[in-house]
Length: 116
Image (tube, rainbow, N blue to C red; front, side):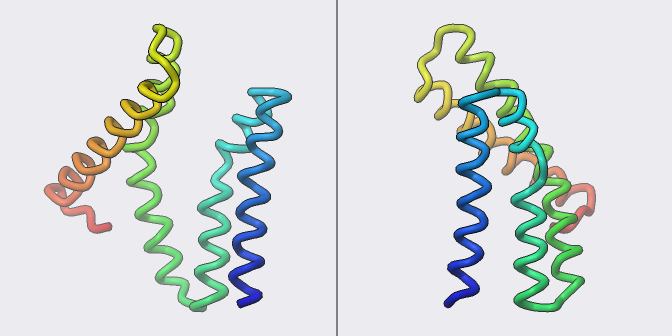
């Protein structure tokens, strides 16, 4: 149980650090958020709980491909906001497009033989 508490605490600290840093400087908040901290923490947590390097390699491979579908969110959201769309509708539309891109990317990768 202590292990789960430590995982949640460290992960929460990273998320809070990004949001607090972004209040002071969008550049530094973006820099911290752009680091693959979530992925790195997931690799460490997975390896520590399983000791399975193949599972870590598989997770890393999947993240590489799937991150491609998430990148347009970072262009769509600011474009909508700059064009006067309210935060929540812009956020929802960006998330909806991203979900569609995830499904599309998984389908395309399956067709070309990439296994996730």
